[in-house]
Length: 361
Image 1 (cartoon, rainbow, N blue to C red):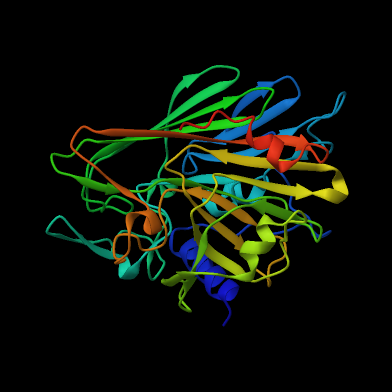
Image 2 (cartoon, rainbow, N blue to C red):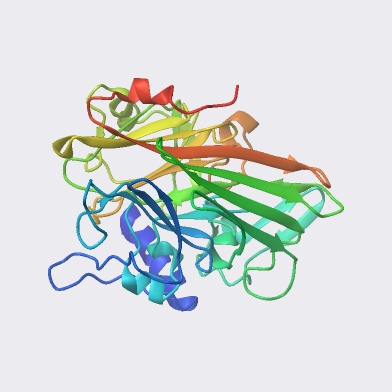
């Protein structure tokens, strides 16, 4: 079984165990997009739209532009893969455009880790993966706070408990602030430790992009985490995709079968559709110093380029903080970081687009 088959099998198992259903295409092979779902919160700036699904893991359901005189019925230009009608009906975060990763990103080996003299077991948390995946915030509804035409805040308060998605033993509160303007969509994530002891943490977002045979990815990374058959990291090292990502042509989304974490990310990545004369740049603040690239060969419709603060199994790896990421919040401490998606035409290079995002030093 290849990397993609293992990953998709895991997602299917998770969907079944948590009453999720995978989106199903219509007879013509396309997905019916839900742009008029009344359960969604809409942000508007001129012809730009964002749809949020607070009840589906605090997820983004769609991010798109309308051409002048266009309408939502068929002329939307999507920068992220939009949620389908079926995915929204099933409240399936895996079918959204992007969902939050908290209080850690990626997998934790056997759903267990030791921290500060304490053994933590998340195996009964309702996460159907063999290795606990993506934290629990994506499996919880988020509370709606501030709402304006161009800004929305979503909140999550976590109290440890015995129910599904509540086994994380540290109290915390988290916020996602979504801001839409003429430059793009920007997300500020924050997490505050409400426990009376130090708390390990990681955070990120899990965006899906439209993928076509022409799709290219441009970015710079230092090294790739190679992995076992069940996608646990083994070593940090070289891979041909690293040079391809940094090349003027970029990496074809079809070049390799990838589901890997990358360390030393430049915090800027451009996903380009050269045949459509458009691209979108993902740019981030520190500590989003790690990137996940999911481009499975067996599913040419799936592509993820994810900003994350930690690599797979960071709480169990014996490696430097620079290589694994993540962090520790002391009682009452808060961390906040921002990332965003900046749409632009092909004539605007990836190098130029990096300067359009206010990245902290």
